[in-house]
Length: 158
Image (cartoon, rainbow, N blue to C red; front, side):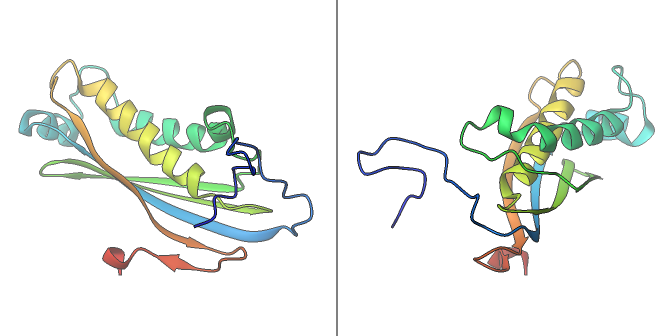
């Protein structure tokens, strides 16, 4: 297996993508926050003491996608040309889906993953006063399209 971010001595570096042509790319990631039944009820009725949890989580996820290179030192600064964050209250908590799009030289998988994880962190932050055991139980890429490696869908997402 070749690691493109390591040189011959094993030192990390940022891959040079200047010779690549911009192409349309997208990536989708999902995350799940598990909370207590009391928090689920408060989310459904809009009575969480800190306010509109889903609105804050959505904006946090969008902002996070745009800040990915500030958080991940080897991520390229690319244009985030579209980002949607969908939140669904379930009986066990909140499911989060983010899709990020660009027309650039590298993919947006990390932007999508950053989006859902920061949205999940925002949810935990806003409900921790009601449920200290609220937790992020998963975060993963479910699909990507475009670029040299083409399209990919997580087998369990098919």
